[in-house]
Length: 493
Image 1 (cartoon, rainbow, N blue to C red):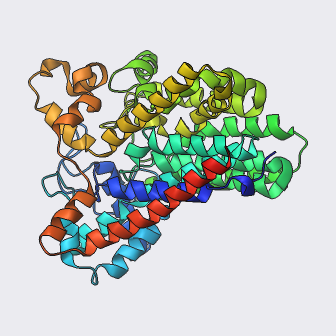
Image 2 (tube, helix red, strand yellow):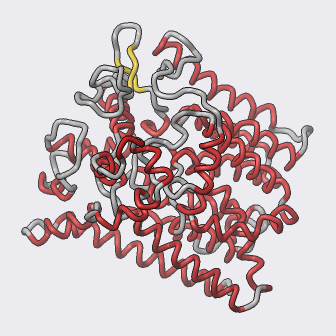
Image 3 (cartoon, one colour):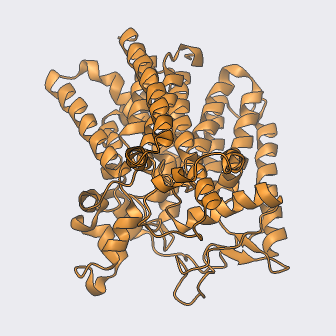
């Protein structure tokens, strides 16, 4: 087993990814789901509870639901509780605290760097604009941390440091993880929890039972990020058994910590909604369906294909056979987790995840799918030169595609699609799934950039250079980190 200290450049990779993500972030709350999670974080910080005001306009309510009821359900005394997992709200508390503390200090003009021609979910005012700007950047750090932790996990599995770094880079910049770093959705944090728990299981072999306990605690917390993360639990248990066997100490403690997380979730649902098994959706927003369309669409549909929107995974298909031979426990864990998540999502009527880039609900398993990419990297020296050239060329094109998807707003494109006469009576969602012209890959070419850094440049031209100066600092830090990553790759050969 390689140790985490041998992954030279891993921390620099995380810093580089965070810097790039900040430079491509929109700096705003883009989805109504995000607004509900933001309001929960604000309520936790300002009032110490989970009661929220809701969105005072029509957004994602089902047709038979009143305006302003999206994203929350009533509590026993009429409170409004968001029905999305509040794990992301907890993680965002430091960002909200920082935004609150600086709201009266930073120039009011900074919030004007955000594009103002978009649909917004709150009444515009300086403090609300600024706190949303700062909190919306949370997933830039979360996704960067996932790239960093993925490199450590690969090294712990025995992959070379060079392989781990290339895989972390490919995850960060050649998958849809980049596009989702722009959001305040729960999927990036779910992915971080999954990688963190898997890493802990791997370290358990040589680091003692405390690692498995930490893995159980992370898995329990992941339920508060999104209840669907429950499907990860049996896969993690299987991974632990394949890694260390039933008799290894630590399994009981890990199970107790996971159960504590699950118990707190059930208690919270009981206190908020009067039923421990009620998430707050009350069947309004999804139902069970036959899985066939979801399974097929998330594999090949122009608007939803996992492989199309995360090109590094397509390149990694060549390595799965080698991965099974090299790291069988990790192989079966990844296969089981991806397959179970794919199947579970496909049985929901909202399998597509709303107005998302590609298969939104599969974003958490992208880091696991990158194991195949790592195994492919280690096979490259034995390939013919033209095949190696094709691989690196494909990775470069995949990075350009990911950049394209990370510079524009899917919400803006879907609004245009709703009004497009080509949609007709077929419905906007089926068209967005199956018609290539309706995919964000094509549609984003018609949109303006939706990037906070561009707004910062425009502000600087108008005599307000402060925000641009912050981006310059981020760029310098990212440049230094990038140089260190390159140096680490060169040292590794």
